[in-house]
Image (tube, rainbow, N blue to C red):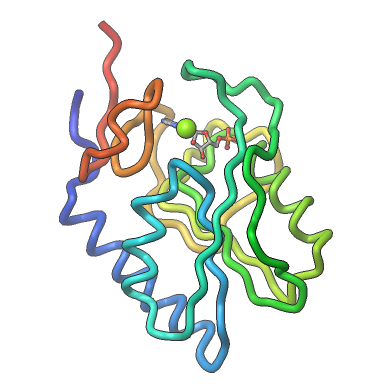
Amino acid sequence: MEILISEQDILAKVTELGQNISRDYDGKEVILICVLKGAVMFTVDLAKHINIPVKLDFMAVSSYGSGKVSSGVVKIIKDLDDSIEGKHVIIVEDIIDSGQTLNYLLSVLWGRKPASMKVCALLDKPDRRQANVNADYIGFTIPDEFIIGYGLDYDQLYRNLPYVAMLKED
Ligand code: IMP
Ligand code: MG
């Protein structure tokens, strides 16, 4: 594997995103919706750098099987614990690839009438987009490579790496 974004660069970017969110939501309370499992590392680090009142909730969806290609079918595996009606919510995603997961999440969650909803994604792969969706806060725009680490997996492995790396075929 080849390191694409170092631990230090990730943390610098997460700090910056946390500051931007704190500024944009000044005087408000925000619910961070962590999309399991990929966004776990990003969500906890981001939350530590937000200095307005924050609540955390978790949702699990599946769009990929065990391989590298999206099945295109999105399914809710675990729903939020609490209502988001009238709340300011930010969906926290590890990566926006085809955009199908986010597209589905946005349509489901808008139906629950939040006061506002934005998307914060650590990584964006715009070359691969199929659905017309974008994040409001983006950490890094990356080329069309399959990547792992800092929450992102290949077959459930490598999520624990503190950096983001490219997985090379062998
Ligand atoms: P999308 O629905 O195609 O946008 O894919 C979203 C989800 O697919 C992400 O939240 C990731 O969990 C997973 N994913 C997309 N690209 C990658 C990658 O390069 N490495 C690991 N997981 C990925
Ligand atoms: Mg995944």
